[in-house]
Figure 1: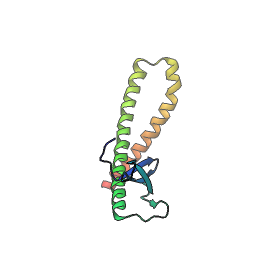
Figure 2: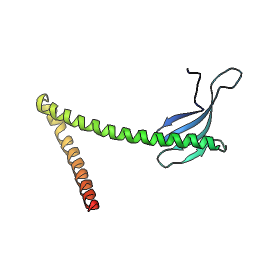
Figure 3: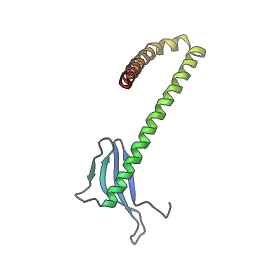
Length: 134
């Protein structure tokens, strides 16, 4: 493990993270993780852990992490959508070139419904954007 450890460790969870302050300045040179807060990236809540008061440095580290995390999650969302586009293209190729009649029977209705739902949402959102721009 690197000798230059960060001051904080963020254990990621579904909606945020548990925040730990790291300490190696002890006799055994062990890494001690002291939980100082719980953060929620969806609503921006920062809850100090165990009745402690967070320092300005703590809050700056948490705010910086939250901003980076929100940006990363947004980037992942777009990347997932681009992957879905690729999967749709691969699915079209599979249906045209390799799918058996039984396989097509198994997936056609659910795929058509999902694509119809997606198309409806996209058309409505596009119309809303066009009306808003006028």
